[in-house]
Image (cartoon, rainbow, N blue to C red; front, top):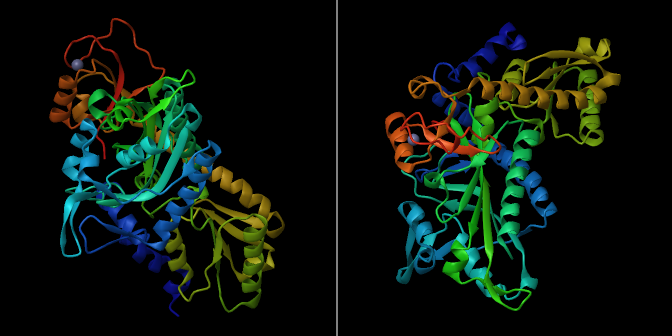
Length: 485
Ligand SMILES: [Zn+2]
């Protein structure tokens, strides 16, 4: 065996060299990570990607945590058909207007032309509505709190893994309520659930707020959004929660008899989070060595790498440690006993963003210790075997805290209060500006600078005399602007 293979430095260099560095080309770095960490492969259909086992495992962890949270709120899962008849999709006018350009149609069944063409669901509002219309009669039937985990299709012209693809996985929640207050409260409850999920589980700080008229969901009265800032200063809309009022229930005639036996329309919400969230994770935490995964959703939380596979004591100790981590700490852990060099393995699991690496060699056994390496800051910690459980549990918390703080610092550095229109030319990040909320003014900024409104933040009231610095009209609110994915 050659020296460079034993120590791995050169082999590691080779593997890592294949990722473009963040500073050199962020967009290429992103694609490199997605492919090299084996999250996605491209399929033969343009814009439709294959989620590979490692990528799918991340999604499964996200699903299992969120699904529990939704159920805690009383939400029930259902499964709706994949097809929507054309006539049904056209029932709510704003909705069809919003989605028509990116709908895929089925016109043949076998060899026969269909009497009515079917669209492949781009989202399922209308399916839920026509179902609600059938099953709701009285106030006793309300609320209905439904969700489905599924994939949807939007015929996008350009595509990028996790960010924009023709088919993608998501959850879509649809609820109906007796009155507007209850529906509005539920819309916000979900928004806050998303916020907690981003901050506590994904270690991603967020900005919450309401979308402007022109950015809101097709058919919604109010759209709330979870906005994140990526390492390159672009914003990523990472989840949304919509209040529909009666817009859909009017179109679909979803009525119930209230406690006074009078007929009323239901009040409705919908909310969703997709595999886009994985893009958010990659571009918030990743570095030049690859992915950095938040421990709670990492498919492998601890990787054990025995240094010297021929040493019986090393292998025995590795298995002993594995048992403690898996059975006592209940963490997702594996031992890599493959024939690759340690250096190759180090680089591989760094690429995959595994939060903690444990290295054990013959000398470590003599000293009754192993080496713990953190993925988030590459820090090495010598750990006595008797302190292993305690140290790992503490390390997981430290890693989460540090990842959140680092991301928060990035958010702070990439957020500024508007000073002059030049900011739109020079600044990469969120620009907070007193804004008129006039759609013409909004469009003007979009055309000129490619900055779009991200949200009207909560609890940031502006002075009465503030004006919009772009058009000079009276400003209504502070609004966050950014270039967005
Ligand atoms: Zn203006």
